[in-house]
Amino acid sequence: MDRFSLDGKVIVVTGAAGILGSRFCDALLEYGAQVIGLDSNSQALTELTKRQLSTRLTTYCVDIRDREALRLVHDAVFEQFGRIDGLLNNAATKSENFFEPFETFPLEDWDHVMSVNLKGAFVCCQEFGGRMALQGYGSIVNVLSIYGIVAPDQRIYEGSEYLGRAINTPAVYSASKAGLWGLTSYLSSYWGSRHVRVNALTPGGIQSGQNQVFVDRYSQRVPFGCMGQADDLVGALIYLLSDAAGYVTGQNIVVDGGLTVW
Image: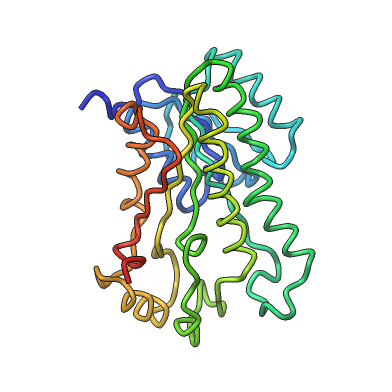
């Protein structure tokens, strides 16, 4: 069981103050990691640190698309700890017109979402993954989406809402997450000889404020008959970042209650 421990491991988490990110930080701290939480939302980061009150949590308010800002974070982390053991690329965003129909989806919104979901992960891999390659070890986990590997069922969205707003899954979200899987595969081969493991964690639908119409329709698509919870992702995440997955790279662990079986 010691192989699942993260004691002493220095792990960088992007999107650390979000719905999934904050739960991931909780889990990493529980398993003994030194967590470096990055997020562009300073208020949410403050709330995270107040709730955790852990000396093993360090946070930085930073835009992950900003290479120079990330470099400063990298330098500070390396100066303090002397290494970086893991990177969890979890950050993702929605744009102002995120739920606009495909035919009228603005290019500005496409560029904004891509810049965070894919470009941001790319820059983080360059900055922190490059350090792991120099060390000769490390683990990168990229958080994908079920809709990066299969298409959304458009039938579930009529009457569906998220926090009171009509929703759909836009093409840019699927494309950005599919691109992140491509980056995962590429880097697992590129850094394989340096013993840097690069894997993906793919959540199915996670219940987080959708209305009952959406929950019911989505759940009908799942063999388990329900949506997932953030806690359902923790086991796979700890495994991928720990020494228990020491010979695992280039893989995608799908946590979806069986949705993709059908």
